[in-house]
Length: 317
Ligand SMILES: NC(=O)C1=CN([C@@H]2O[C@H](COP(=O)(O)OP(=O)(O)OC[C@H]3O[C@@H](n4cnc5c(N)ncnc54)[C@H](OP(=O)(O)O)[C@@H]3O)[C@@H](O)[C@H]2O)C=CC1
Ligand SMILES: O=C(CO)COP(=O)(O)O
Image 1 (cartoon, rainbow, N blue to C red):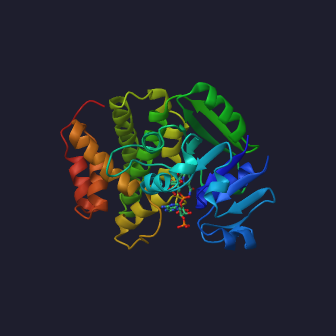
Image 2: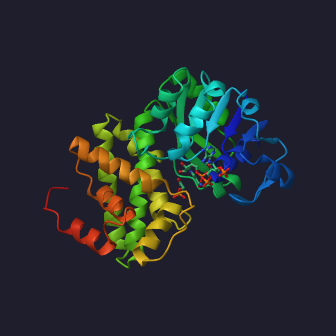
């Protein structure tokens, strides 16, 4: 099956490098020329050479000729990207490789693909993985979700590589909620550590954050098993404990009162705001998400957010 990765950020480039180990892969980049010459994505994934079987192009129509397309642009850019290229993309199999909830609609990547490209087959690839680890060929396990079970099994075969092991599920909603929410909780964990509140506080935030993930997933009728898997618990664990994570690092900066480069892709910031709005509209109790939304909108500081969480009415676990 021919494969193209659309979007040459850190994750798209890493996936293309990994997949090119077992067959020809096309990587669509807005600025393909430099990468094609240096055979490296110096801006987003330095130090990871592009293998021979990886063809880089700026021509989306050319890339979209592949049977399977991996869309690796940030969540808040996904709709615009799909719309801009709808003529080439509709009717194809599109695997979303982004994590988040769209700010204006409250939708996840699979729902956005279905809305913009009504004739496409939508799937999502998500789970605990840093781009640099994948590109270096370190062992990684991810969740591949697609409602069509036959397509899911075919994609699982073609996207699994020697070091990238995929588990499949039909539960696209659970897979995308896990990947979206773990980033929000990672910001909260970074803030707790950055503010010097200690590792016990982080464990509390992670666990109660996971409870919020389960609550939101139940509201959307997702399978709790998906949330307990790689795309939920797995990615929560990685992202809340590693300074490789940009979401965690934003939290650290907030906790320390330090500036943070606003050009960095931090999916949890917009997602916290989107999910906080969803929670209000649907009467859901998601206090950590609300605190993160307050932090990223500069309505709250870390001390007030922690106080608000600690003084909530006592309840059963
Ligand atoms: N980095 C990681 O370790 C992982 C990331 N992810 C997910 O992957 C997704 C992408 O993140 P990541 O690759 O890290 O992001 P990066 O910040 O590394 O890169 C973002 C990429 O998106 C491109 N882009 C931005 N806007 C548009 C647009 N409107 N149309 C087309 N392309 C656009 C950028 O192009 P340009 O360079 O031209 O600006 C750039 O190539 C996120 O949802 C993230 O959560 C998932 C797992 C791991
Ligand atoms: O999604 C990721 C790890 O699974 C990458 O995390 P960040 O986007 O926080 O860097």
